[in-house]
Length: 111
Image (tube, rainbow, N blue to C red; front, side, top):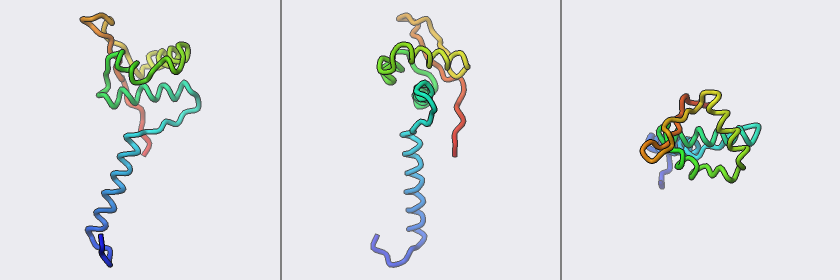
C-alpha cells in the first residue's frame, strides 16, 4: 500500500483478509475422522448442507462417486446415516417422484 505507518484502513484491510481466509477454509472444509466410513459420512452431510439440505439421489451419487468406496463401504456408511437420523430419503425413485436425500440435522461446528 506504500504507507509508512499502520493506520485504520490497514487494520480494516487485515481484518478483511483474515475473515476471507476463515471463509475459504470453511468452504473447502477438511474432514477429521477416525475411519474411512466416518470420512465418507461427513462428505455426504457436507454435500447436502452446501446444497440447501436436500438433493436428488443421482446428484449425490454424481458428486460423491460411491463406486470409489465400494458398494459395501458406501452402503454401510449411507445406511448408518439413515439409521442414526442424520439423513432421510423421500420420493419413490421414479420419473415423477425422484428419490431425494434430506439432511435431518446439522452437525455441530467447531469454532
